[in-house]
Image 1 (cartoon, rainbow, N blue to C red):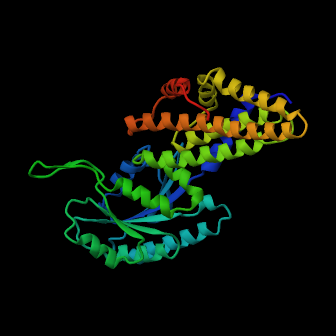
Image 2: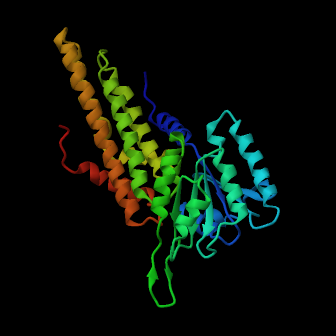
Image 3: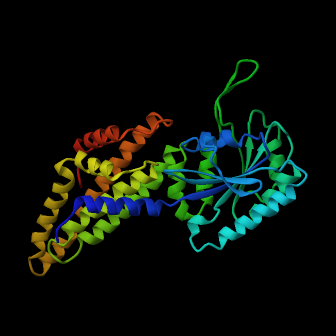
Length: 362
C-alpha cells in the first residue's frame, strides 16, 4: 500500500486537535475584582480583551478565541441586590450543558474570585460558589494579593465548598515604599486546576495556559510514553516488515499531539517542515531498524521471536527519542520567553540540532 505523507500529516493533525478538545471554565466575581487581569495573565491570546464575548445569560458572557482551547464563562452582577437572579440563570445554563452528550461542552471547573482589598465575602459570592459546587469543582481565588492578614483563612471558612483557596497577584506591582511585588500564585492556581478538571480536558488546559511550562511538558511526556507503548506493540508484530509503514504515522501523530499540547496551532506545512527538519533520520532510522528486525522474522522459530523482540524494543526506543527530543526543544524555547510563542522556523532548527546530538538507543 502506497504511503501518502501529506495525507497522513493532515489526518494526524486533525486527530491531535480533536483529542486535545477544550476546557470550559466559569469565572465568577464582582466587577473590579480583577477577573480580566487574571485571565490575561494566565491564558494565551488576551482573551479578556477580545470584546466579542457571546451572551449566555443577561449577566454572563462566554469568551473564546480561535486556536486557544479554552472557553471562559464570565459572570457579573454579584454585587447587585438581584444576585439571586444571576445565580439562577447561570445554574440553568450549567444544567443545560451537563445534559450535552459531548463532555467537551460541559462546564468543567469554576473560579470564584474575591478581592483582597475588600476584606469580605459578599452574599452574592457565597451564593454563586455554593451553586457551582453542586455541579463542578470550585476554586476560591483571592485577587490583588498583597497582605493576607488572615483573610485567606476567613475565605476558606466562608466558602467551605471550595476545594482550596489560592492567593494570586496577576501583575508586577510597586508599593508606596518602592518595594517591588512580583506576580504570585498563578502557577499554583494552574497546578490545582489541572488536578481538578477531568482527564479529558487536561491537555487543553496545558495548551491554553501560559504560566506553567512544566504542565505543558508533563502532559506532552505522557503523549510520548503512550506513543512509545503503541510503537512497541506494533513493532512486535510477527508479520515481516508489517511495522515499517505503521510506525511512521504513530510518530507523526505523536509530534502533532505534543505540538497541540504546548499550545501551538500546528499546520500541515509546519508538521511537514518539522519532519523534514529531522532529515533522513526520521524515516531512514525507523525504516532501517524495521528492515533488520523484519528479516529476522523470516527465520523460523526463535528467529521470529527474536525479530519481534528486537523490533518492539527498537520501535519504542526510537519513538521515545524523537518524542523526548521534541518535548525538550519546546520546553527550552517556551521557558526562554513565556510571553512569546516560538516561530515554526525556530522550532524546526532547534529540533534538527537536538536530533543530531550523539545519543544511545540502549
